[in-house]
Image 1 (cartoon, helix red, strand yellow):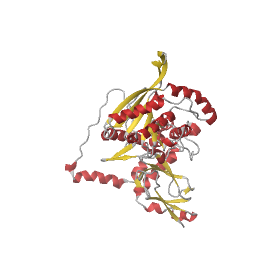
Image 2: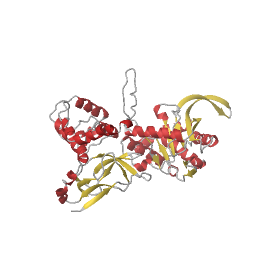
Image 3: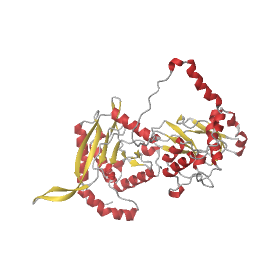
Image 4: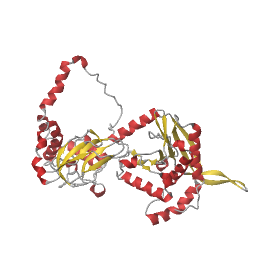
Length: 450
């Protein structure tokens, strides 16, 4: 019998550890090579980890919720059929390691006869689940086996947020016949915490008074990604003294050029030609003019990055934002930028981004105009030192200077908002940079061919 040690893979250049979210396979299951075995969360993205080799999952070395360093062993895979003789071995481990796996299966079996809520006749194995659905399932104690029986109304039978919330509500109204069983298996651990206060009565914890809310409210627990975003935004405001400069740019030439080419490009490439690659091209050019914008801070050391990796904010299906980046954006032409922007945006919406897509950004742009906002004051993505928000393009009357005199005409204008870290970026540099981006947009060559 050949045993292979499966280790925590490296999922990005700056990622040193990952948190085990969910084991998709149980001990004794047969696994194909490259088949997903578990879900891992890093500080950048949630992803599935495939098996390095086909065989039988002999032993699980880490539990859900454990933080594991890159390269550390996480499972043992037996590479031939003889491994089934050793499958019962994990049963000799501590009961605590077995209960989380057994409890969901017992609950599912106990609920099977119930007609209180609809379930599929057969499990939908291999079905895609969004991070939002998986988070809800985890919070509600729904195992992967049980999740596979939930009917989905989404694309290709996927389970939507509405589907799983309806299932949870209906399940809570069903008879809980199996509830006493898990409690009976763990009487000893329950008694131990109760005895501790008796030995140290003076160390009674201070109980925080429950918050009181008036009116008709709904309590919504943050999911894991929202908590992470909240922590990062607070940290960024604490670390970096934010200053924001604004410039209004006349982008009439840009709008007219896109209107001329968007249908041609759509027919030829099968993709949309948006304004975002045009903004990124101008930002990359301005960074080459002002390289001290493309820096990060480590203590009292300023690190100037030679690569220009421009990040773009993308909305996930859960409503959260994630920022993949275009590596070496200054080395791509307009067609290459358009392809990269569309690829990252599409994979972001499908939850297909990789840790490498999110690592290594040196500057970020956020298109708040896509939400109809005319301007915004974005928060810097640490450890970067600047971020730009581009607002909605609006038609306005403007004075047009001509050789024959000034005229009033209708032009397309947009606001650029540049937030920067005042520790290392002064107002002159921050203001000149956003002005230079506006100049590149205003002077866009209408004869450009894509």
